Image 1 (cartoon, one colour):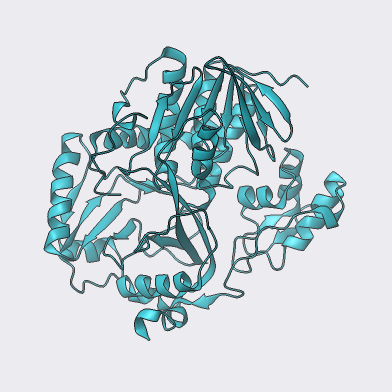
Image 2 (cartoon, rainbow over the protein chains, first blue to last red; image 1 turned 90 degrees about the vertical axis):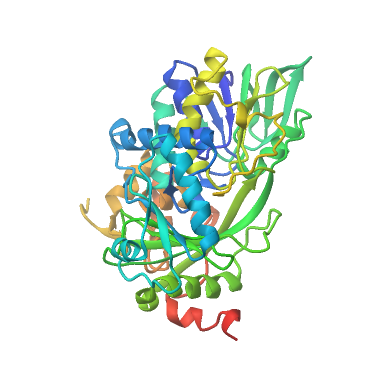
Length: 376
Length: 92
């Protein structure tokens, strides 16, 4: 078999799949190399939320593009990706949180995001069964939403195959060969692949992939855990976000009616352990029931864990690198699924035209990492 | 051939749908599960996954002993949110 392509994408998560798809649409021959199976890394472990409520202007702009794209994917793939604009509601239980959200809303409005601060009463109207105990209100954006991460990622990969590309599963990259400072080939357990361009979309393993060409990138995985309940009748539409130290976030899956959610552990849990813990499966239900008491009788059917690939400032790294032909799109900090469609488009422009239509300077590899995202 | 045999009862996935996905080239249980949702419902694949493994074996010729099953995850059976939260360390 001829193992020469125009572009090799390492990793079949949302980032690799979307980037590969937009490159294939521009007539490049794309090979995606995946060490296990599509969505094995972080994409398949995420809960599928899509929001524009960020504080970094670049993240807001990326998400405007992504939301636009998500709304077209079912038609583009000829298959339902379960995109549903049910909104996001960030709850404020303290004056400090309220001020943080009010400031964020001010920034978001400059970019025409349909977001507003709503009262305690409105929160209770938006979320059927919400406990308003200690609640001051919330930041609500009805145009945020959700989609099915599997349907979106497999949709992109099927698209790549239709556009003469290939997806190689169980194909683990072990070495990247350079010739002077240029990409020459990629060695895997399934042989050697050749392309002048390689994209590191390795998610939690992106740091290891970058090391293969001698680059040290500041991306460290942290464990996040999730659970899903049995399906039940529709209770509410938005992703409900409680950012208190012992808060949580969850959403009712539009396609199926399951509740799916997680929380950010305090302190954080760096490392590549993605085993599920007994602490989570008791603590998460307590937090969910505190917010929406009527969930008490609903049964939890599964728990699992995955990685947030964190960078020092909470923003991704999407850039070319000092190695000619080697690109990186990783360190998504838990936002990979929602950023994926837009970053895929912008990365394809960066590779083909040398620059993207939306400048990605703030996601540059050599930035100072000083300005942190407050709505991580 | 039988037409509409439901294999995954929780998510109502038929034999026909499973065979179609296998023919598309998705020849692992992990991929079939993620594409069709079979095994993601109330029983978590405890009723259907061995049947799907047999269909996969018949379709691809891989012996069942070589087919890798998706990771089994807690809880072993569905448990109400209230019951679980009573075990939370915050309330001990």
